[in-house]
Image 1 (cartoon, rainbow, N blue to C red):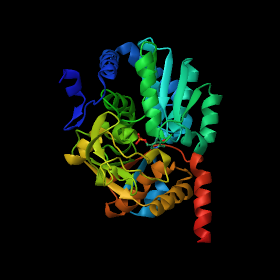
Image 2 (image 1 turned 135 degrees about the horizontal axis):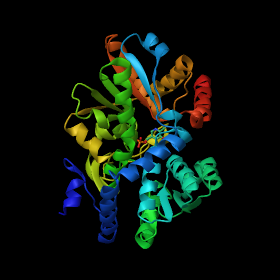
Image 3 (image 1 turned 60 degrees about the horizontal axis):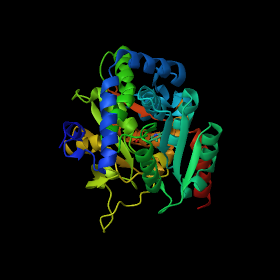
Image 4 (image 1 turned 90 degrees about the vertical axis):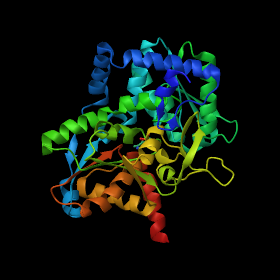
Length: 390
Ligand SMILES: *Cc1c(COP(=O)(O)O)cnc(C)c1O
């Protein structure tokens, strides 16, 4: 095994399980990432765009009303919802596009399921004047017609993939084919802390800005570290970014929250999916199990390799919440704080609601608010309407 592959392991998880022609592309990417990530000029450029385009640093807001209502630990919200495009995904997209430019790429490709990563990618490609091709399962393009329109408005080409089941997995395959054929001028921009090495490491690097800021902010506000940090987990990028700077602080509990119908970390078993090893939800035949979540961004049968490792070694805890709890949290945060959260982020709020009252008033928790909920308002409206009828 090459040294580079070993670097991509988190305990038994991670690595890269891909064809040799793709491995060469990944080895080169790994080398370039290592070359630039600590380069002062690269860092300056990244910081410039994070400030001027994304709008960082974003606040760590004390949730006064929520703290009162829950009657326990002090609750702070890390406001990724205030970033340009309304979520944390843009942090990683800007980082990877700047790397792509250094590598001489002219063309960015990505795949997207619900469309959120596609929209973030198309946004930054417009600003950096890069060609952008987004692969999407034909089935998903129908369900997410508005996001397809957004991407096209931003100048991206959306390719509807009709092969296989015409879903996310087929879009991934098409994007990888494109990469193998066009790697000389093309950069594959992955949206979560998943995939073969070096993606999980790279995505963590670019999302770590979340905890770099929150640690500084909580020390300023409270003069001490938080007692717990909570984040929702889909592929795991906002959570690993929110945890990163606390991993070596054993007094800080790290809690990832999953939907109970896509509880990869709770019920998953070690297996290889999409080119890397992680905990995966499998059906009786040993195939990845179709998951369902009311939050499209959490609907993924695998999970980042580092979370798989943190679960097995016990450094982080992973819990589940139900759809009813998520809907209640969505409404409660809106009503008490005037912040409508993404349905994904509402998962973290829902667990915090159970945790905070068990803690004392001098304890502190941080909820990573991964995104804003404007995109989900119509869906919640329909769900609540149907509830009333039932
Ligand atoms: C995509 C998305 C997620 C899930 O992705 P992770 O990689 O697990 O962070 C969570 N919240 C929001 C708002 C998203 O858009």
